[in-house]
Amino acid sequence: MPRATKIVATLGPASSTPEVLEKMLQAGVDVVRLNFSHGKAQDHIDRAQLVREAAQRVGKVVAIMADLQGPKIRVGKFADGKVMLEPGQSFVLDASRIELGDQQGVGLDYKELPRDVKPGDTLLLNDGLIVLTVEAVKGEAVHTVVKLGGELSNNKGINKQGGGLTAPALTAKDMDDIKTAASFQCDYIAVSFPKNATDMEMARQLCNVAGEPWKHRPALIAKIERSEAIPNLESILKASDGIMVARGDLAVEVGNATVPALQKRMIKMAREMDKVVITATQMMESMIVNPVPTRAEVSDVANAVLDGTDAVMLSAETAAGKFPVETVEQMANIVREAEHAEEVSLDADFTNKTFGRIDQSIAMGALFTAYHLGCKAIIALTESGSTALWMSRHRIHVPIFALTARDVAQRKMALFRNVHPLLVPSYADRDEALAQAETFLVARGLLRPGDTYAITCGEPMGTPGGTNMLKVCAVR
Image 1 (cartoon, rainbow, N blue to C red):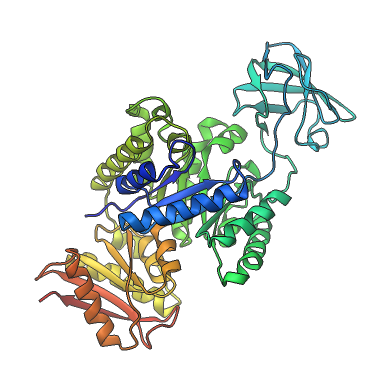
Image 2: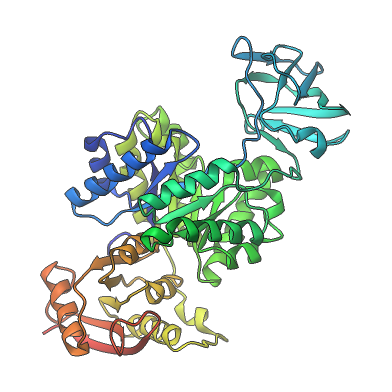
């Protein structure tokens, strides 16, 4: 069985050489994340080219995800680069401050903070390591008392406990970055800090306009990292192609203890709504400096797999860590072991379900048939990838091979759980397409004489959303 759960890895200084990147792809990376919080437009264009060239050399399909920075809700800079805050001391966050910060206070990148907070609010800085209580708001200055102290350095992030910051999800920089991502036909765009479906709909419009010169429309991933997004989760999912469980900022806003249950709920909802889901943040954090993960990290990755996530993501571990290749290898091993322990409950998945579309009914029929007949594979001949996506929403220990003539669809499907996309020529004749699909998989050792497989396609051939046929075959 090939590995079903996909691995997303972030590119950075530790992984931007062709040699390291190739090793990471060979170790198991399926999607490369470009973090637009760092670097200039040309840096991302160059890295996208680097990824595509490396993928071609190792003979692997790899998707590229552009992760937008979103609003900069951060403190300014300090004269000495950092200060040490002690519990009980006063500290002022001043949106009008021009001079560098000191022990008494600091300026703000986010100028709207004084209008977003009131006395009694709790502010969490540097991923919640520093806690401030708002005592008063005087003009542009937010006067606070340090509740939990520590070292505060330049440009650390600010969160408000319980949410409520009004910063828009898409900034002017994000709009420019969408144009940059469109220029190299990015496969996925991750939108930071969306609060509602409107944020995602606006991002969709911007992406469609930016991609029009290339007739390219990237898939959109909503990063769930604001507390306001939780009650709007269903509508955000409807407006997106998938979500990212961005546990870092989310945990700061809603509390660490709340996140595990939210993660399970989000993964379950995404799968039920036929959307993809990525689980992210600190999955293998200790491997930034250590050659092996902690037992807790191993359990964390395995539990995300057992929850049904499409992909698990690495951030600083591969962008700036000492062991980027080893981290991917360890993650791939954990994923495989977790998948061996998965329970398949396909019959229960279909209980009381109705399917309103022919192509979706065919996809579900293929899963049901392959599972009960013990097929070695499911083959989906697909134009857009929708049939493969629907199949991938259900746990089944039968690999799904998605054959498409469109390289854009092939890269998009690299993120789908248990889907292995392959690029094939386009055939106008159905019988020829079916015969060539079997020949294609046999030649690659994916099917052997005597193996039974289920295959789906649409007739007439080449029509997106037109899957209307299921056939069960045995390799001669």
